[in-house]
Image 1 (cartoon, chains in turn yellow, blue, purple):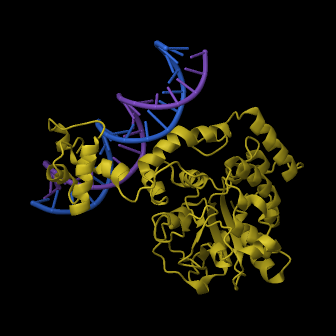
Image 2 (spheres, rainbow, N blue to C red; image 1 turned 120 degrees about the vertical axis):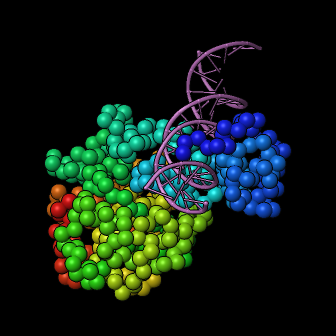
Image 3 (cartoon, rainbow, N blue to C red; image 1 turned 30 degrees about the vertical axis):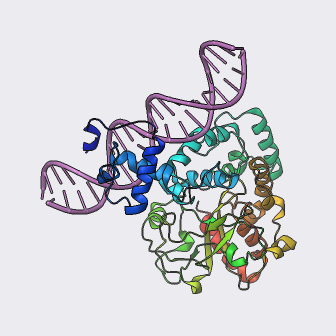
Length: 386
DNA sequence: AAGGAGCGCAACCGCGCGTAC
DNA sequence: AGTACGCGCGGTTGCGCTCCT
């Protein structure tokens, strides 16, 4: 254990790689593959340890690496993923094709941390800093007063007092949620409701022993269900969903990645009854959300339909600017908080306004519908335990 | 113009885990 | 079962560039 034997060997070069070394390594791996890394330097004629070769290949020479600075979309995604995964750089990198863990780690330590602090967010906990700067605090106070100026015990008001980011509004609603669904955001007209439908459906019929009504997302049972092979049955309405964001960068619906611990669960389209959605908005600002709804979407609706009034997507989808996104996220947080109005005040089961899916659900899922109100109340009472 | 500070990035280090023997 | 080894990961370091004074 500990130090590798190769590190004890003398006469091995360290430090920056020369172009000649790069060429040797590149030529060797291109021709033969890397195989056993410890043998690579010898076979490639390099005075390096295998570990150094591996690192150089992974972080620099790999042909599929994306060069250049990170896009706002990528930065946002990193923030979202970090909120869920923490310093699991390799797992975060797995969600960003062409980016390395080292690159992301460096970006985080050099740029994103700073940006979050400037916005009054603790980059480690993703919670508001204890003493936010005055401007942030003022802005958030305005948001609070719009949200519910009369409710002093409104936990959302309280949590938003330091900063009005999405993360604030979700705290302490989702203190230990370790689950992410990457919800695509697009201005692509072919973007259909199925794409929006990136919600994990939870079929209580197939597992009557699992009490949806009493599920507590903070419970160890729930968390262990999510982090292991669940006894619950999560399904994906659309398995092969893939779309693009407004930069036309593909956002893959990763249902086989390590991101979803339940990724090996067999999809079951017939299971969609009560939805438990856990989502992260991509490229539209800081937003981690959880949605609860009834699956009422049967037909495909075009993305343009949403923009034409079926759902109040608004301009939030058209910006890539983090600042704009954040301020918009504040607006949406208020605007769509009505969705939670059917829940008890202390439910704290909030929904991000950034996620079109939740906005869509907000419109479709009207409590005054007899069919849905029952279910809604059921769900409401369920999450009243939180 | 010179020097120091700050920053970004590439590379290294040390550890844990898995596997072969 | 114990040991050695290889791999991968997260944390850290150090170099070089840019900006500021």
